[in-house]
Image (cartoon, rainbow, N blue to C red):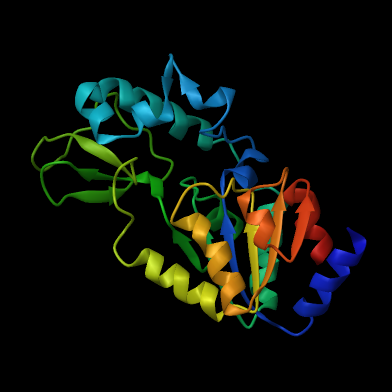
Length: 239
């Protein structure tokens, strides 16, 4: 691993253009539960059951009970050394774009500036029936959040299963990756598309691809360097 880290340091010394994709793994190191595995279920329901329009239509009260519980837990969770190291990498790069699949905003809390939230954020809310929307970062919500304008149901500002990503966000992510000299893929299973395809895009565009994850993933085959371990322990070594 030392030789690989030295190789990355040599690239960083040239002030490269950097793009990063992060997934649930980096947040899990701060204590954020992931969708996958044993902690992906709540009262016998999976994330796919809860984070969907169908699930909300069938049981809006239950879905909001789950989201309010997640919001409450996130208020006590802080960025970890992996988040902090990415802030430093942004300072070292000639250009930097952080693409994240996470909805917790821990990157922004750590100080990252150029963040593309592919799946939205758990903190904003928007009305199901009108144009009302508002950012309620770390604000407690009632059991049944309703629109102050039309009294319709509010929903979290996340991308649910089966929904399209925010308009134009993948184009911005794709452009940043194609322009990058160095591309990090961190803490993601690399199975959720279209985000997973960014590793292949980076490789084809000529970037040095570095994967940091607890275990091998489908992206490992296209990575020039694959570092197995916690991002909170590996990323600081690059600095």
